[in-house]
Length: 374
Length: 258
Image (cartoon, rainbow over all chains, first blue to last red):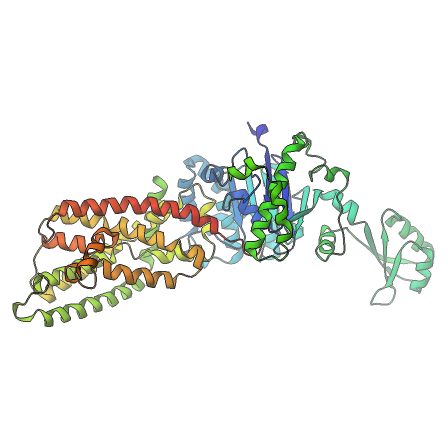
């Protein structure tokens, strides 16, 4: 049955269509600047809001139509809100969820034991929610979201406001979930949450998917810059180093003898830099910056990097790895995309986004049958 | 069903945690009860009667009005309104539960403490305010009392839906409570109002909140069965109206900040 699980959704935000499908067991990072439409997508996927056009499907269920059936198969964590009962001990909130999802006593106990192991939940059970610290609250909320062992989990900023220790704990837990085959959609501003958990990243901006592909590929394609930080024992100038590596940029550090050499990894390797420097000077210390996804995303947000979809993405914004989805008839996608534009325009007007009228023209393209079904 | 019972139970425990604060609110309503009693005592001194009510009857009417005015209000509209306004309602919507039933269960969760307050205040009032008639027909009175909670819930839930549009609860509450106070007969018995207003009030749901149980208590309803049937009809109709409204209203969930 699980193999039949396939999700294909076309969602729309303020001004454009989002065409996205997630495979069972996939861990997807969904990132974008504030107001990009991340939470809207999650609200559409959970059935909280109804799309004004297009189609949303989760595990074969249309969320806004079968909200409760959908709710049984998903777990949701909104990092900025709590689903715990404010005036009650954590244990009571969990017991309520047990009744809500008809969890058997054995399953319930097993889950509590497990949460105790990974989230140290046991200590929190007797504590009244309003007395929890933010980190404790988030651990308890994670337990709430996952108590019924959902096969699909949406996590909206699960590490917001947490200290390093708790963040690490949450991330470990996410990796564990991922290893168990839970489908994860992770929204975050802290990109360290993604590394190690998600292998696919979708970057959205302005209600539009601007990148959809492997995390490794995005780094490979857009985070080509490597930096080697050197502490040299021999007096040498930046110009000497620059002359040695014409393809790299050399900047002197704050302290004497410190230099940073930045280069494109396709033109130079860290090994070549080290060998070259060693011929000129004594190398005391070396540090090499790993390419961080953060750099890429920061540049995308800032508008410095114009990500253009590669040939694989152009086929319908699907990751190259998700072959089952590509088998979808192309016509379905096209129809959804048109519907999405019309809806997008309507939404944009409601939200007061200027320029929405520009898109209304596309409404004429909507399939009449689809229009009627709304 | 089990989960809604659990929610009612959990709400009852939350309510108990704040019993002191609630008791303070009740003290305010008691003061109002005393003031209106003093007023009617002055008006009906010396065996006078207005609109067919003499003083002992009026006292009983006011007490029933106090009791029915308390039912279903401890965990009332502000719980739902706040959840809508701050967006917490989104969390209810990702659960396999029916939001309307959840709020009804919470509404019922306050009932225990409400009954305690009613019992205490009634006891003291009867002791202090002197003789007044008992219920004309205990069973009919109980039946009509039982519909107060669902009717109030329906009106509350329905009007609170407006918060999805207004994003503010106060105006909605003031308007509703003002209308309900007059048309339910909580301020003065409906019998003392102009004919056209009486006719209107008779078919509106508000009379079921105060007037109907109070008149049945006093045995002044010419056809108590019909009045209870109207109550029942409104309880059911409001439930489905509210359901329908919620479906429309939840589409109003705005997508603040993407």
